[in-house]
Amino acid sequence: MSSENASAGGLPLDGELAVVAARMAGLLLSRESVDSVLELIVSLAGTAIAAATGAGVTLVDSAGSPATTSASGPLVREADALQYELGEGPCMAALAQCAPMRVDDVTTERRWPRWCAAIAGSGLRSVLTAPLVTDDGCHGAIKIYATTSGAFSRADEETLATFASRAAVLVANARAYERASRFSEEFKHTLRDRDLVTAAKGFLMGRDGLDEDTAFDRLLSLARAQGRTPAEAAADLLAPAPQGR
Image 1: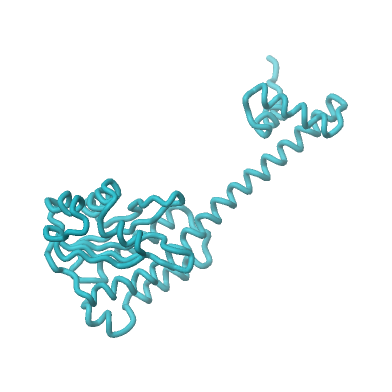
Image 2 (image 1 turned 120 degrees about the vertical axis):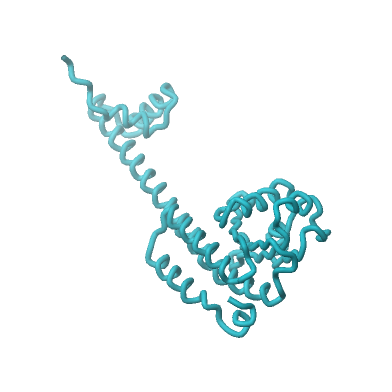
């Protein structure tokens, strides 16, 4: 796809991204489906600009640390890993400044000397990266690499930035669905634990003639003595007695 076509109107990728967004809208995503969305974004980013020979997505985790979550190949992962290790590079700058970054030649670039020196021997020369930004903030960045100097133009920057703004919505939705799925599972565990504790209290009340508060205190004492949670102690208490031979 040429830069001129990209800058003249909507991206041809819009339709493909819309299909992914529609699929996500009615689906509580699993970890695998989130990964699939990221892999698709990497694939589309790599084809959005003809000069790109590799692409990847970096996401910022809940602790604020960057991690490559999808990449087109080991060379991209290596280039990204060096940025995280050294704490510098175009992707790190894009995340920090929430702005696109372009490197025309790593052998002459002076903004990130340690990273450029470390990556120069890999054969990579040009880099273009754009942040994934929504109203919720910067979720990460898309980056593309090329093995020739001066591979990316200003029009390519605009193309990748436009693509990143649309992909950011997909990433934000994927992460929201993932959180919802995780919280749903945690809620199920909470309900299960509550039911176990309630049943164990009833068991102690009936067996030992205790009131509810005393039964609960008895359960807590058992849990502490066993070094377990109240729910775990409750499960043991309610487990069927082993059958005698």
